[in-house]
Length: 382
Ligand SMILES: C[S@@+](CC[C@H](N)C(=O)[O-])C[C@H]1O[C@@H](n2cnc3c(N)ncnc32)[C@H](O)[C@@H]1O
Image: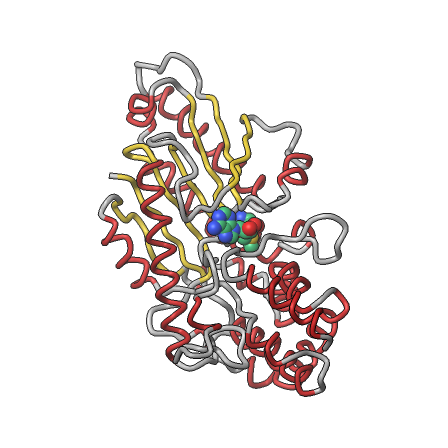
């Protein structure tokens, strides 16, 4: 590869160390809005849980008294560009409204007026907020606002939110752990793009980064939520004791890795390009999340568990091996293109990965865990 081109790519790839990627919008065929049905299935799986939670645990009288006025404030953290966020937010608003009506019809004392809803759509600054705003449902019954900035830090005023919600986003790291791209470190992830099939120090570095990020996430939310407010997270995780390499999703990422390795061997890609590319995601186990919640001390845990696969429409909907590849490509399309030098090469990587999946289908299908399980975390601010 020409030295200038290589130098530029290395500079671009250094962005990956500090920025988590954002979803592709516009007319690209890997546009997130058209390739996020798997994430939607995840949400549909846990919707009844969230509805039950709002019905049973959300004390509206206390919340309205505490925050003053009758505006109920909801935040969707890591909303992307839709349509999933609108779907999720609408359900939450509906459920809270329903709860309010139940409350006022069952008690003599009715609060002065029906609540109004304000929904904050949060994502990274480079999310396509214009695309998001353009597709806001015209019939919505809430006031909408965009909030740019990393959810690993404070993005709202103190005690201003009643319910914060995040779907398919909390497993994203704020950056690739620096050790995994450091040649002098025992955690250098040579020839690999994730920790699933990598040596243990690599996984340890990812775990440490997740602890730092999720610690910051919980600290920020503990300041932003009112007392009695709720934090609901759903994202891919692992049952206690399971390895990421034991899931089908982990194996599919490994096939992408093998395809990139082939292209390096053929001289199409540079070894450095492979060594400098890592997925900024970590799939925690419930016990790791429990530890972080306990360390934070500001939340009572209502639910914190892996969703039983029997209950999962996500599983029943059958996310196949090819669908996994689409999920990976649509969530990582932008950093892939930026790092490896354009769509053409990314097509090659994913064509190769598709072939690898075919060759290894039997092995992959026999992995311990057929999917990537979901972690459901519901916390209440003390
Ligand atoms: C897979 S998408 C999920 C989008 C949507 N919640 C859904 O269910 O379809 C993950 C989103 O999280 C966002 N994200 C990742 N890290 C973030 C951070 N630190 N702060 C805010 N948003 C973040 C990404 O930009 C992306 O839009």
